[in-house]
Image 1 (tube, helix red, strand yellow):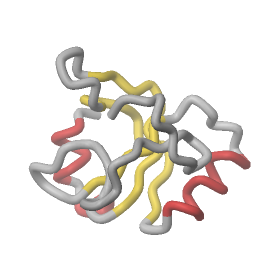
Image 2 (image 1 turned 120 degrees about the vertical axis):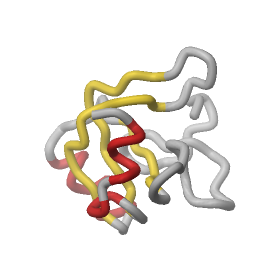
Image 3 (image 1 turned 30 degrees about the vertical axis):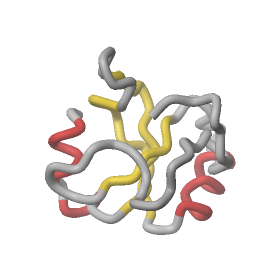
Image 4 (image 1 turned 135 degrees about the vertical axis):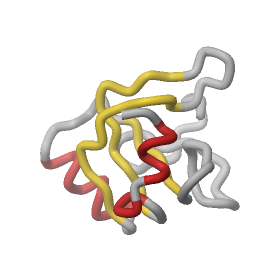
Length: 92
């Protein structure tokens, strides 16, 4: 599913998403497509389920709604790993 399609889906707006089989834009390093395997407004709850399901290769991104870029809510500048921990070594 493309990032544009994900952003336009009402069920994902305002949610943290776990994306599997994620593709990244070569120029920006941001997610451009992927399979949404889980979503939640609560990052901690999402990360607990991702960890319990052993989905360790998922990208965790935030969806603000139509036209948003994959990332995190405003004010949160550090990328997160699949466990929801800040990971300054990752690119967004």
